[in-house]
Structure formats: C-alpha cells, structure tokens
Image 1 (tube, rainbow, N blue to C red):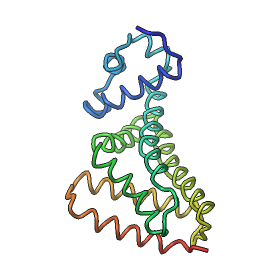
Image 2 (cartoon, rainbow, N blue to C red):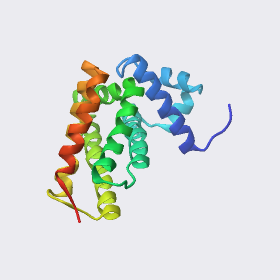
Image 3 (cartoon, one colour):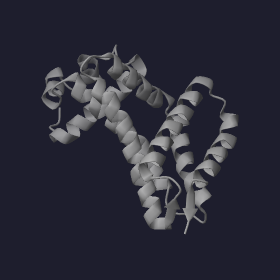
Image 4 (cartoon, one colour):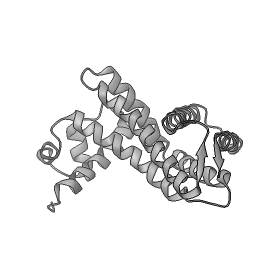
Length: 198
C-alpha cells in the first residue's frame, strides 16, 4: 500500500465512506467496511479518523463540496440574471439526476445525526453549511453582476437552501424528469424576482 499524506488518505476514506453509505445505508456501514472499500487496513482508518462522528462530518462536508463545485463553475455571469441563476440550478439538478444515491445519503445522514445522541450538532452543521454556501454564491453574484437584493443575504441564503432541499427530496421520491424543466424555470423566475440588477 502506497504511503499517502494524511489529508489525501482522509479524502480517500471519505469518498469510500460515501460509496459504502450510499450503497448500504449509514447504520449498516462500519469502519471495517469503509476500510475495505478504500482498500486500506482498519488501522489506517483509525489513524485518520478519531471517531465515526469525525468521519460523518467529513462525509457531510465532502457531499456538499461535490454539488457546490459544479454550481460555482456554472454560475458565472451570463447575458441575463435569469440565465445565470438557471445555469446554477441546472448544474445542481444534473448532479442530482446523475447521483441520486449521493443526494439520498444527505437526508439519511441528517436523520442519523438527529437520532444519535452526541451527533445532533452534525445535522445542524450540515444545514448551516448549506446556508453558508448559498451566501457565498449570492455574494459572488452581487459583486460580479452588481446586484441589489430585495431581502438580506442570510434570509435569501437560508430560503434557497430550504427550497433546494425540498425540491431535491421531492425529486428523489417522485422522479418525473419531464416535469423538472418547468419547475426549474419557475424557481429561476421566482429567485430573479428577489433580485434587482443595478
């Protein structure tokens, strides 16, 4: 087994945990199964993570990064605000459709953390991370496109996080790809209505 820097090994184990948890569910995924998924010994896992709690936090952060990276790349300024917003939602939506198990895992992690004593703060951190991410994206667009908001950034960020969360869960339950173009168009128009271009 090649020696890797600790941060790289942690990332390898986190990605292995995401694959194992997506496939087997959070409660059935053990540290041993994660080590096997990553192709490392159990002692390597325990060297990189002090606890399952620490691993769950790393998984939550990494899952968020998966979506955010795509959206950040897509949400560069375009000809209109609507096109810019729509591009960001489309990038996220393409990721949901391509990786439904990964997005389902985010909900399972929330429930797991809320129901397990001592893990509750991880669920709170997960949703704080969503809002912080939206706040960063909003600030980026404000600066690059000269936007004025009709609502404060923290309010809009939390609203977008809640809306995206609900839409994602709705899709995971109901599917219906054909309906989502119109739904995303409606969401885009609504969000654009909360923003003024200067």
